[in-house]
Length: 193
Image 1 (cartoon, one colour):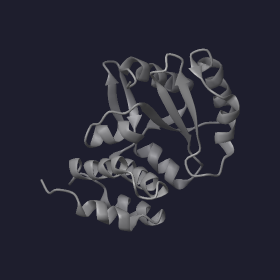
Image 2 (cartoon, helix red, strand yellow):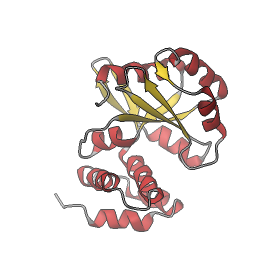
Image 3 (cartoon, helix red, strand yellow):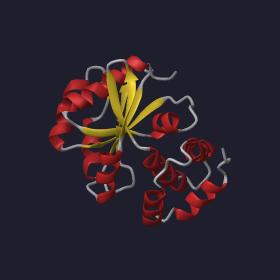
Image 4 (cartoon, helix red, strand yellow):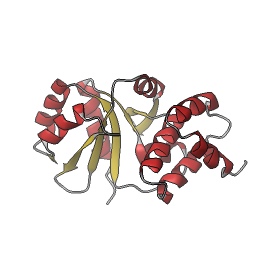
């Protein structure tokens, strides 16, 4: 079952109230900028300190199944996309929280995030279309290039945002991550308007 809008709104408002720098990514972002599709979880990229983790844990531990040790591990892990999961106790809402490393790219993604209205009185920062494409290309590569969902999301964003994308930014960061060839392949599959 997909998470309810009210549950999403509630959790994102909590992050905002805590002063955590974040943006929504994953399939929520690709659906915002590309072809909408159903998803069962919410992906959020954050910059957090240990104090932020401790405050978040104290607030969510009654309503979400979560591991404090997993949350602390994600702060210092050196793997690609370290994350921790929060599963709401009603079992209909899962959040994957990806802890971003301190880097030039992290700062770029946070500064380029775009507000997206998810409730009548609340806008949340969503990863911009370019960063949505870059991140999904990274996931596609990590998954041995077999995920049709990831690939279709990538092509869908490129297609829906055609003519409005910062191509230099896309080129720069896909080259940085060794994914320029994949980006060009995705571009070649975009249907012209």
